[in-house]
Length: 89
Length: 112
Length: 168
Image 1: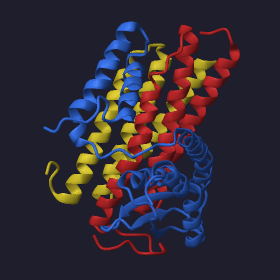
Image 2 (image 1 turned 45 degrees about the vertical axis):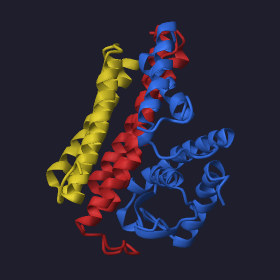
Image 3 (image 1 turned 180 degrees about the horizontal axis):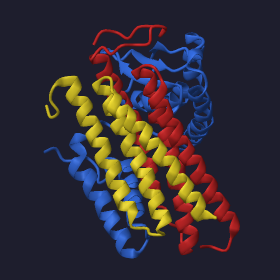
């Protein structure tokens, strides 16, 4: 049963990724696109955790944690670039 | 797979709840009319969704290996710490850029 | 470099580092506990100049109660936001609300701002330069004054009791 549920959840997350991607393409402004990228990485974490469940492997945890850290840093860096024009002051 | 079937049900419920919330966040990002309203969907619904997913994965691996596996909690914890910060940075950037607001928005942000 | 006055200049940071390392390693063997203890001692000691002054006292029991309340609020109110998002968007009443702060310390203000951002329906967008007003964007605000009262009763008062009990 769990395999079916995981597959279903993978489908739902893929739909969420598609909607986010549509917003990334559509824009209309830079902050919208950054927000879309932010959501994209959060959904990517969900996708990777589900893949770990599906393949029954605990190895994907490190990847998910790295994506969480890198995604946060990049979102803040780009937002700061918009605010101030440079990142490291 | 553990023989205790209630674990299976619990994991399935957590996974479904989590992915539906992630989807709701993405729908909010897609269809709401202006940036500040779009900010609400992803920062909260998606964070909670991934939190529930990670919780489900934690229960699954704990039941499967027979020992408690808590390190997935780190991801949830990290997401809950960082989501408000990135939302705040994005809102500031958007106000700095003077993005178009939905006309019926009441109240004014102050000048940056 | 200024020497810290104590062996543990930031006890709560040390505790969270200890727990964090053990979670990351996902085992509580002797070697891991020793490594975690070494890190929990060294990192606060080496970086104490970069940390803001930690709050005087911390009421741990109340913090725990507050955390549980915020978590349940997050879950319950997310359902509400899901309904708002999926419902008709004509019905939404977005608004910017100016929230007059009573908290004074930077740390407790940032805790309050994060709490506001996490509880659905509201995002804290900015703080005024004199730290007296918080700008909040609400997704569906019926009555600004009621929202301000709600945040004041439910979040700001407990945070003040937890972190600022020793300052006026």
